[in-house]
Image 1 (cartoon, rainbow, N blue to C red):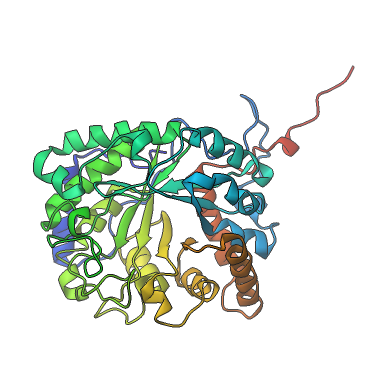
Image 2 (image 1 turned 135 degrees about the horizontal axis):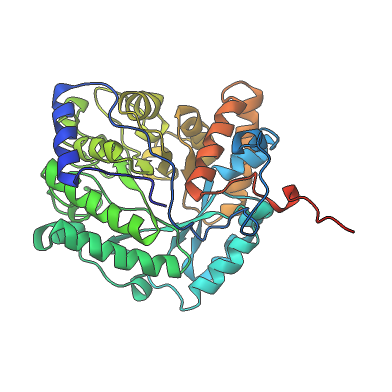
Length: 406
């Protein structure tokens, strides 16, 4: 799903983005353009070579008829182990928006298992199937797609073009295995040791130099997109130099004043390039918010969307991370806060995904009834999810005219 259409080189975009960052200007770049190229294998509601599409129909008009529970379910990403993909079938049958694969060695039958899973989705609207293929020690299915060095090693030993080619090769194998989204690249600017309980990045970061980190992150994303896999820039607004790992407990990024000319540079370059998806971190941002960024409207709506001009899909990091648990929030409570703050999809990692999914949907229904979240917010978020999947609800079998009889 190549949403970006870059007429300039990555370096050119980066230079422009850096100038704007230092100038402290407003919205950056154009919104992502309409996608072309081959569709993903996440499930589509298209029918035949010449589907029927009523002229007044759109995803938004179709979503307007969905129940709040169905809309909420489309905004959730559930975890599943690679060794037991069928365990996600109940969630997919309920219409969950995404499935996140965990593990370290994918079975040889992963492609067939995922194909069967996607087919069980209601209305032909399959989930995004995602995993973490960053490189180094963060690869879930290297045995199927091939091994990559740590991001930092890539930047130190390879050219951006070589990184792009490697990501394209790995992405092609991911797509063959049925995975449509990679939760990578890590666009954080970091030069420390790790990843570990203290530093979430370390070798996962391409560089401590913002320009180098941006150039290589964009190259990695280009390779994935060329292969037909959706890249995800993470962890906004930048975990490099954070005072702790939000997976382990409360953590704060560098002060916003420092991020402007540092950690935000790769993300501004990414937005200018039209990247399709950004993941928001669970760390607070001194100078902006004392709440985790994933739950903060100041960070998501204010900084990412309004000031930086991002119009793609916004997803959270795991909502049962230590930084969220420290606030004594349940996953459903955190999900409601994240969606209200501007997140389009929420994710978590728990041993009871089906129950958690149902509890999130129920919590969102209550939030809508109490006026904490508007129905329009859910429709807009679900619309972004469908756009990312390249699903057009108006190209569905029930809208195809019945054949004429003589």
